Image (cartoon, rainbow, N blue to C red; front, side, top):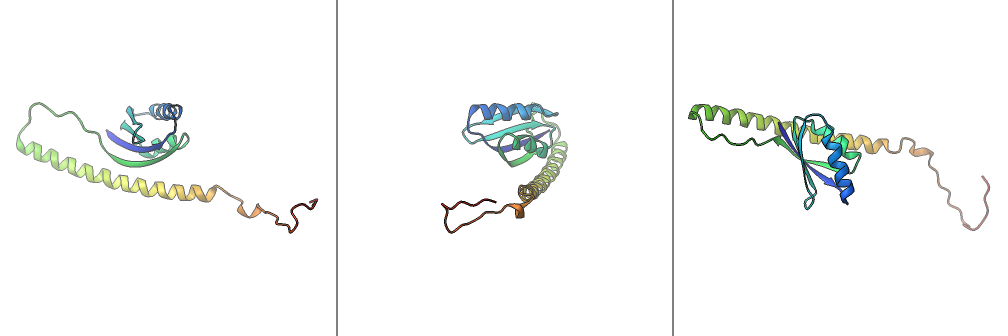
Length: 141
């Protein structure tokens, strides 16, 4: 399970509900929570953060804040200290992997935004503007 925290730029309740609907329809989403004060959306479950951002970009501006493992409830009885040490090592390795993946995703998002910006105006040279000396004159093209 992963926990993805996103910054979402929504202005009103309607945009907030649209964002929650868009994310909740994704496969693997277990819970969605919104913090309207900080404009943060938290998604937990087995989801791809890039897919979540792609869905939300159709509704409003979105950026990834963090990607990490979801915290599970603590067990009442602890096992041997050796098993705990092994679990701690595995969790540390998993956390490092998730941090590296988050960095990779952030780089991919910055690249995709760059290419998206480049593709906004596919024919920039066909735009022409005319500047005339006398703006009140009549010109027939």
